[in-house]
Structure formats: structure tokens, C-alpha cells
Image 1 (spheres, helix red, strand yellow):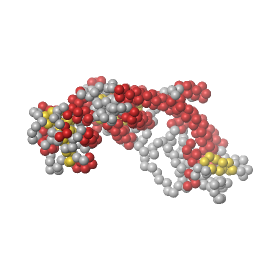
Image 2: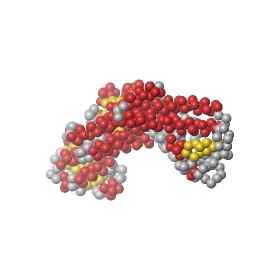
Image 3: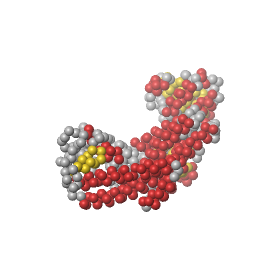
Image 4: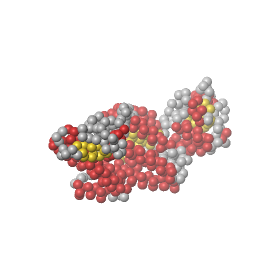
Length: 521
């Protein structure tokens, strides 16, 4: 079951959100997410942190959702000194389709401080990729986040007015009201991350060209060269840069600007825009004479309310995408149930055939044929299940499975989470034989009756495409029987591919994955 825990500007004050974000690093450590995974409480997790939200998307057993929520919130509260009960009241908890709807809305910028901001999609992508590389995701999380990325692109393409809104743009609009002419202002940019890149583009769009950049990590010169701005001189301190600036825009997690940094400014008024969370600027700076401070809390008060035409269009697209995704998940449950049923029958028939086979080679040939037959028989029902999902007729399909085959389809919340570990390094094979991957090649085996005739088997590559056992056209390891010949060659014994020796159980067959090919390539 998908579960989302959200702490945002809408559910908690910026002070609470700032303290939680400061403790965000703890949420990625093994004693929280990975620890919960080791204990079996959480199958997978993706943690999302932006300038106005801290969220965890979890794949959990349905019965453990409340316990997992309480434990994670309590653990986070212990690191920040917050009252666990009050913090839990500030966390929005959503499950199943509500969690999917929230994820899609977040990726599309509909739940952002500035509705429609495009930067959030990149932040969602980065945090998802980090979780996937770390091995924290599951099949359910992969499907939800990948679909969210697709929906985000679709909304930006089809909904007007969703590409020009951002926290940085709104901050500059407010800055224009504090300055006589923003175009002539001297701007100091503190930070070189994603927000800094957005800020440079936004400043250029408003005709601001006197931009200097400061980086505590020493990346200012490289950033300046890439983006057409100038780096603060190596001998200059942050206070030196502030002293000669009209506007200071901060968007970093490394630097904290205090009163002593601002006190040395040469003359005139100074506008400080703090886009960081946690704060980059001490709030006391705003109390200094001649200094105006815009932080996220102030910017949020001027953000437009949702409900404009573009928001309604985007919300409609998201709602349609959630319905489609939910239906597809229901169809997947039906396909899993079908494969589980067929897999059980298949395992029983393979075991029976092996008991009756006269040799291991004969048993292997029979097993390959049975697995191929099972794959072919399941193909059309699987396609029809997805067609039924698109037409909103999944229930009819499930009823048909129960009437015809006696197969009961479990609900999404009843399906155990399937963890997807990080992909291992791909195994390399030395000089695999070309004939194994030749589409026209057929495998020939002696006829069971011993008449000297040969029985054509399926094409090696066709078997690869259909059989769930095979993950690649691997090298041939087992020689063909003396009677086997390649009809596409001039003569000589033909090689038959040596398929992986791992055997499928009915549960792995139902999920469409094996030890060899489970999506971890």
C-alpha cells in the first residue's frame, strides 16, 4: 500500500518546517528509513525535500500504516525537540489513490508555495533517482513516480500559464516594488545550486545584468563561466560582496548571513531575498536600518491563490491521470492473479513431467515447451485486462476470471509490496554465438518415438521474448543431441541454447520476475 507523509507550508508553520528540514538528513539514515525496511515495517521509501515541503512516500503493508507513521514521526521529533503529538497533527497522511493524487499534484506544482512552479518536477526526479539508486524503491513506488513524471510533462504541455510561475519569479516581482529600477541593481547571488541557476535566468529575463556570485564551496568561478555572470573575487569575503550590492539573493544550504555580514555595507538600502530552507539569513538582519528582508514566509503571503483557469485545467488532467493509473493497477492485480493461477498449474505439470521423463534432457525440453505454452496462453488475457482498465471494465474482467477459472483477484491493498533492490553490474559474456539470436533458427529435437524424425521446437529468440525465464540470449553451454540439426546451416550438429538453470515458483511466475530477470538490470 502506498502511504504519503507530508509536512508542508500548508500543514505547519515555516518555523516547524525549518526545524524539520534541518533534521532531514536524519530521515535518510539507516536508523529511520533503512532501519524500518530491515525490520520489515517499510518495503520501500522515497523522501522528498524542497524549499517548502518535507515528504516521505512509503510502500507498506496495509495493516502497519498507522504504526509506521507514528514511529517515523516520533523518531524525527526526537531529533528536533518537537512534541511528537503536535508534530503528528502537522503531518498530512494519505494512502493508496489519495497518496497517488498528492504525488501527481506535487510533481505538477499544484501543491507548491507558488502554484504551477516548474522546478518541483526536477526536485521530485532527483529525490526519486537517489532513492532508486540506493535500493529504497519498490515496484509500486517506481510505477507511481515514473507516472508522476509523465503527468508533469503532460500538464506543462497542455495547461497554459504553468511554466512561468516560481518562487524566484515571485520574489523578484516583490523586489521590484522595493527598488526604483531593478534593471540597474547590483545583485549578489549566494549559492550555485538549482535555485541559483533559476535565479540567473529570472534576473536576465528582467534585464538585470550586473550579477556576482559567491560560493562557500569554491564553485563560483565555474558557475559564473557557465551562466555569463561574474564570480566574487577570491580575496573578497561574503561581507565584501554584500557591501557593494543592492540586492542579495540567497539559495544555499551552506551559508548563514548574520548582522555582522551586513553591517559593513557601503551605503543606501539593501534588499535581502532569502529562498533557503533552513533559512540562510538571520531574521535579525531584517531589523537593521536600511535593510529589507524577504524570506519564504513573507513570499508565501503574496503567492496567488489556486483556482485560476490554468489550475483548473491542470487539476483536471491530474484527476484523469490518477483514475487511469488506479485502473491500470487494478488490471495489474488481475494479471498477477491470472499468472499466479497458471504458475501453480505449470509447476504441478512440470513436476509430473519430470517424474515421467526418461532423461534430464527430455525433461528440460518438456519444461521449455510448457513454459512457452503458458506464456502464449496468458498473453491475450493480459492484453485484454489492460484494455478493460482503459475502458473502466476491470470489475467485469475480474468477475470473468472468477467464473471461468475460479481465480479470485486480491485488492491493491492486499498485495504484498515487492522490493526492487539496486541494479547490480551487468554481467558480460564473451563472444555469444550469433546463431542463438537468429530469428529464423529453430531448435530440433529427436522425436520421442525414436523414428529418426525430428520435432521442431520454438525459435530461440521467440522463446526469449515470451518465456519469463530468459533475460537474455546467453551463450550456448549445452551441446545439442546427436540428432539435432540446424535447418539454416549446411550441415553439422546444431547448438541449442543453455537456458538459465534457475526454476520459477508459482509466486515468481505470477509477478513476472525471476532470479535472472527481475528488472534489476
